[in-house]
Length: 253
Image 1 (cartoon, one colour):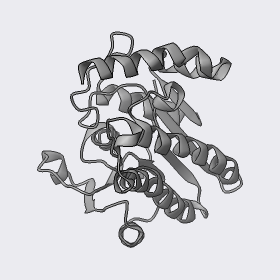
Image 2 (cartoon, one colour; image 1 turned 90 degrees about the vertical axis):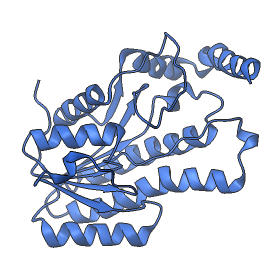
Image 3 (cartoon, helix red, strand yellow; image 1 turned 60 degrees about the horizontal axis):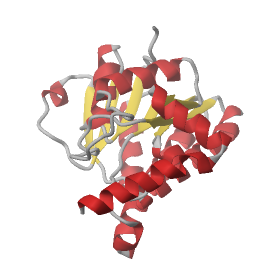
C-alpha cells in the first residue's frame, strides 16, 4: 500500500521509538527529514545526508522558534510535521507533585501545541500535513497514568478542533492514537494478552499509510479501535477493566 513520501518532513522526538521509525521510513522513501529531539543519540542514521538533527526541548517555546528558523533557512518547503515528543509517568494521580504534573503536561501537550502552531503558520501559504501523537489511552482512560492520559486527551481535542480551521488553508491536521508500541516510553510495563505490543516500525508504516489516505483520526491496532468504539457507545462499559487494572497494581505494589 502507498505510504506518504513528502519532500521535507519534521519529526519531533525523532531519535527513538515511533519517531525514529518514522524517520527511517521517510528517508527510505526519499524525504529530507529534520529530527528535533532533546537528546541526540549516536545512531548511524544521523550521518545520512537527508537527515538534519536539531537539539530541541519542545517544552521551551524559544527553542521551537529557533528550530523553525533553521527549517526556513535551509528548506524551500515544509510538507509534513509529526509530533512524537513525549514522556509518560506511572502511579496514582495523588502521588504526583504539582511539578511532575506540570512537566508532563508541558512536554506532551504544550510542546505539541507550540510546534503545531509554528508549523501551521509555516504551511499557510502552500498547505501541508500535521500529525500529532495521542494515544489509545484516551479511549481506555486507564488508572495510574492520569497525567499522560490528560495530556493525550487534550492533544486529541486540540487536533480535531484545528483540523477544521486548517481546511481553508489546505492544511491536513491528523491525530494518531496507537495502542501499545514497543518503545522506551513503554518501559518495563507488562502488557496484558488483550493488548499486545506492536513494533515501532509497524506503527510508523500504519501512520504513513493512513496519512497518505488523508485520515484525520488514526487508531490502531484492532484492540485500540475496539476500545474506541466501546467508549463511544458507553464509557461505563470499560469500568470493570479499569478497576481490574487498579486492583492488580495495588496487589503487586
